[in-house]
Length: 180
Picture 1 (tube, rainbow, N blue to C red):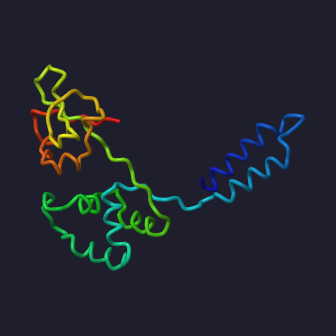
Picture 2 (cartoon, rainbow, N blue to C red; picture 1 turned 120 degrees about the vertical axis):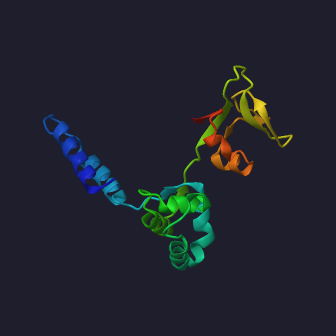
């Protein structure tokens, strides 16, 4: 919570109760105010994708030096296909990589839950047309669209890429749907 939000909250609370004969008990309001004042602008952990957390964990011991080397080594002109996931994130407008990494270093971080995808082969009307990983057999096949104890039909991008299925994101014969 920031200071403007705190002021607005207590102005509204005062206005709501100031016209009653019995306003909010003074001590209750002061206790609540002090509790929230102590939390005011308290630094919060940064939420980051898993690959950013991985880079940070590998580089936190000499953070400043490794951050400098990272920025120096990512070429200013590049072929996007040759960049890893972290480097693409680092160069993407709007990610605020320096601010994010420094805040991680100062205030800690939480890992965002990765997006999961359902991969369906187009043109097959059968319910068994979804790319699935069978956990016990350690094989990929097609099944229905639901996860179960035996197979996983919802995959992260990283899981698909590590199994050489990264091409599904660019294939016209495949539907890739983000799932919860």
